[in-house]
Image (cartoon, rainbow, N blue to C red; front, side, top):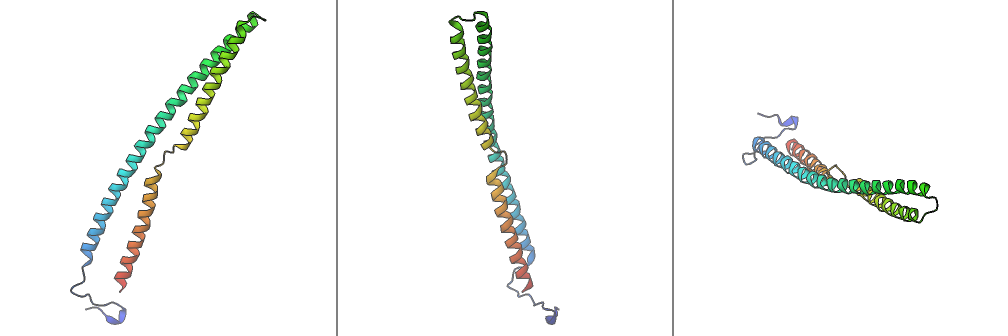
Length: 147
């Protein structure tokens, strides 16, 4: 029999026992963890798709920039070969155009890659909310046990 002087109180017959409460808490936690894993998996898949798309654009920009460099090298060769010929001006303009276009693509895709994070932000935020919920539930359970 509990000692009423120690602060313990007798349990009423209609009060639920702790075993079903802990079982339900465990089931809820398992379900929550599964849902969080599914959310993180979905978000990671979306991030991976965005990263691969932006990496492909980066490669395309680098290829176009490389083409511009090749044309600029051709310009130098032709320009030095025919010091005052008309065709060197067209090579300069074409090489400069390819280089500027490639640099623009590279810069744009680099910015997009930086914006696309790897960490699943929604899953992290949800986990933080779940941790706060779990802390509140444990505190409430502790309060209920003390009564």
